[in-house]
Image (cartoon, rainbow, N blue to C red; front, side, top):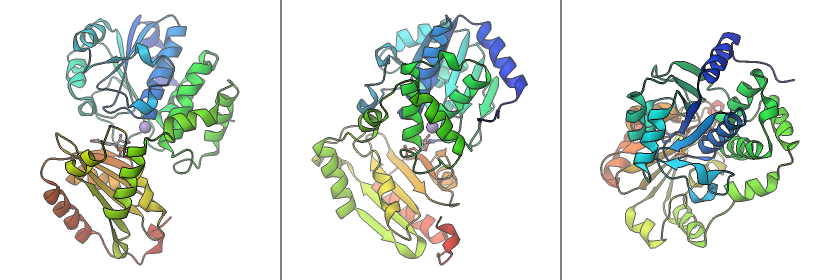
Length: 346
Ligand code: 5GP
Ligand code: MN
């Protein structure tokens, strides 16, 4: 039995906002991941079945590994079709903000949305949602925004609108945000939701292979190189650092998505419970952090890397050289107490 967690008055308000809108826009965060795009596509599909004119608008391109999701061709990408995106957003009577907690997370699209008078509904599981929303449905303790969208639909008595396509999208988001149910996935209700999605005749194994287990040869070689040559371990701090600069990325013909999952790998080493990965993108150094147990990488990303995220998975951006980024890391390391404290290792 899945327990209701959202207040009845929030559900009632959401129902009235949906009833009052014909044109609905659904947005998700920059560099959409499986949870961001999965929750957006699923909600969009459900709203369309309700008779709404619903469109997903993403701030930038969806990675190649997720293009197989149903109805992806209807997604409007702001950076590819700015005028079209602007038109759609300006016509909207209701705007959903999925899988992000702050308008800064969607760049120029955020500025556009902030200029609109249409009410904004956030459905998200990141910590500390900002006050830029008219209705906030935020549950940081949940595995994924996809899980939360399912719960919203459950409480709105709209589960019948989740068809096979929407079920695929929700499954992919729950899967990708939990490493295929290997972390953040202790709540038994998650498996009840999974079972309910499976009853819509989805091919879970195929979804896993497409969304999480498809890598090019270049990508595998790059990850192998990173682990073999570029991973530094600091066992006394329970820490690992991986860096990849532009030359190295070029050498392996780096494409977006090629380092997906790399930051998790050092966590498999006994005693290593937090990992930082610096990747030198053209505009800035992209920071990705992961941890286990109660070690908060979210705080590190907020304090040092203009970012945020969750307790155990967070990210941000560093503006400077790789040497400066590593210097900052060394400073963080110094501030981190030596660990003989096994409690930190879950
Ligand atoms: P990833 O390391 O996979 O890029 O991101 C992990 C988590 O951190 C995701 O939940 C994502 O939303 C969050 N995150 C990643 N990059 C940023 C960022 O630049 N700013 C903020 N606030 N969160 C981020
Ligand atoms: Mn998410």
